[in-house]
Length: 473
Image (cartoon, rainbow, N blue to C red):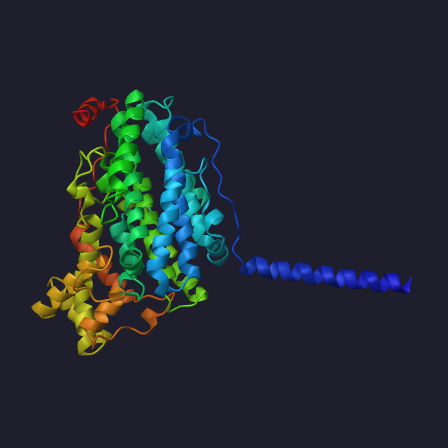
């Protein structure tokens, strides 16, 4: 009897301890919620209609997920070996793609444990990719009703995944909020893992090309022809000779961007998140806990913020009649919206950088206010030229002749050894708020009064006859 009583007491204490521990853990731990398709009439339309493209997406997402673990688990000094090794696996998966869409966790289990919120963010946007593709692929949704359905699924994404939803604001705004250019990791992946980096640039050509092919093809059989020919272009031209920059939606899918700017901008923010994450993970100067802190800061900056929808149409389309079946020099070039954006941000920061060499951040503010309209912020013309030339090299994949080794921050330290950066801003999870405000002010001055780009008319279903005829000549 006594033994039974003791046993009950021990069990009760153990149970209470378990409950308390579980409660404490729940408070501290990230909830591992799953990502699942909403039950819609058009569910799996893209899978059923465009199986080849669906499987290519699976191969691209294998590449995206696998690199996370490669970067976290191998030293940076092995970058050339690891870049070559993974790229061979990536090509193998592309040539024989998976039959179903893999989640990020499947191919990068270590990263899933280390930064779960990252993978919830990515998988949620991949779900948005699939559902928006379903809407455009479904023949039963009239062409005039596509926009309505796209708006509904965007609202579903924003509300269902509100803790990890990315911003519908253009990347020009969210990149300035993130402020990653002044961090010690910026540019490492594009410069030191060029094979895989360039494969992702190819993938970021492919994603907009999917939408644009469907927008050009309409609901009928021309849509099928457009996607099949686009996949031929991707396989025969883009994979062997990928773009030298990340194409934005406004560049590679201008028609879709006008139809659904919120989702198009979310996709751009996701694609940039991939690149920033890889840079953070490639950097050997921080522990995994520090990398997590910095990554989650970036997630917040790229994430949804109140009022972002008002900015969704603040962009222009450089090639409004873009043809995804014509892979020309413009699409291959390192010059484009992404590069322009980075160069602008550098120009906006230069007055403060110049002031930091003279005497700290207080003088930096007065210098900034007096020189915001100057291209070099008081910096010598020679130094300004050197800075912008080096930045252009860092924004180009691989290592160029005359490029200073290391990250962009390493290059700046060589060019301006007397530059003083805010110690706190260099810490993981921290940012120089004054620098961010300066860049956002710069964007506001350049683009704040830009008229919202017009929506595209969906009254008449398009015909791809002319574009398809051009490719057959």
